[in-house]
Image 1: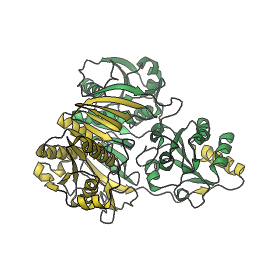
Image 2: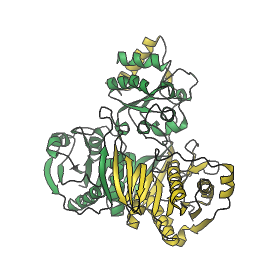
Image 3: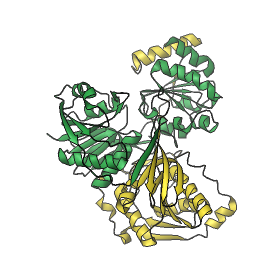
Image 4: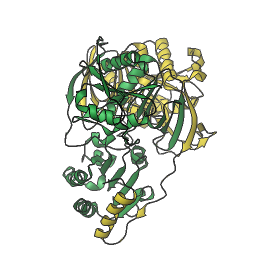
Length: 257
Length: 308
């Protein structure tokens, strides 16, 4: 079985982001990681291939620096990787999906595709849907449990309020992974060493016929959201503190009735 | 005047506040309220009161496949020549809008915090609330989902003319919903709740969430949990707020015994007012919230519940 996992190279959520030239950000000093939701997809793919045989291929669309993220994914047990290179910090969802499709067609279409449920940098929540549509495949997102049964799969998806829906789909298909699907492994040193020797094939975005300038979503401006500057601490006895809190929330902030 | 469709979400026979807020966002256009898998007649008056010029009663069972629902919405956009389609960034809303965008090959802006429909511009979070991005899209049909609680619904009485749309579309047959497992119906959905009370590691046991449930009931709030509380087994993952959990944006967020890790803030930073209760006066959360009480949550929360 061939499984492709789409992995995005994103700034660590703990990183401080500094805006550069209004529409970009300083990325030299920022720590990057594999998109956290994608790790659930990597783990699931590796477990499936450990059981059923085959290979796990990591597919990343990103800058050259994304090699560090790819190595992390390879250390978790993936076999090899493809990097579609772009200089763009914010390649839009549609073009990213087109790049993934082209890379998959070049490499040979897989039996199963994993992505994360969304990316923590741009939070656009659509790339895997566009990829699935372009390949004519089913797409199921926010999957916290997956059972494969030959050419069929059953996915349990979180839909809010603790509700879940169970969806059947035919394979190949695209699965958007979320927490609950598994617990991603921490690679051990030998796995990290081994990952350094694994193949990463690099392709330029232009070589798959995509023009990054053709994006239909344009960033006009990025602005830092100011941090709250520290709390107003309530004072007095416990009764006084709680009464003052309720008064403030009702009368000053007007957030409760 | 441009035409904007609003996908209406209904829960417990009432229109969700976030759907009414989406109609408020569309007030400068002719509003088509799209009612699916529900009795449109029962919500007609509410929809008219909040600005629906036309109410489209979509007849046919669209609950069997998210792809079928998406195909129906594409057909409705064409039928009524809609210029835009707005919805709520709920789990189901985000999912179906992504499918519509993929079918139509149109841009989609998801989970936005502000929108100018005429200009095709939005404001939305990047990097878990650390950056606000202004985006402009080049779209023939403008597709957008709004983060719950960011637009306050305002009454704007309109005609509310009822029309019916009969779905006559073949299911693409890609996905089939075989079962919907209900959560605890007495509990509100976290992502859309106007008030959230969250328990952190200090809650110390699953049964102690009953204390937060009691407080939440007085506040009309949903109950959430920090990653530390989920990983300790005190609460299910469906209650987790933060990175690898839910992103929420309530009017009021009350963090009880939550230390305030960056990953937690990634999921609730855009809340309007954040209150923290923690016995550790050095807890990082006090540096990033609006109001703080230093004290044991087992003293403070019951007192709060009593006085509300």
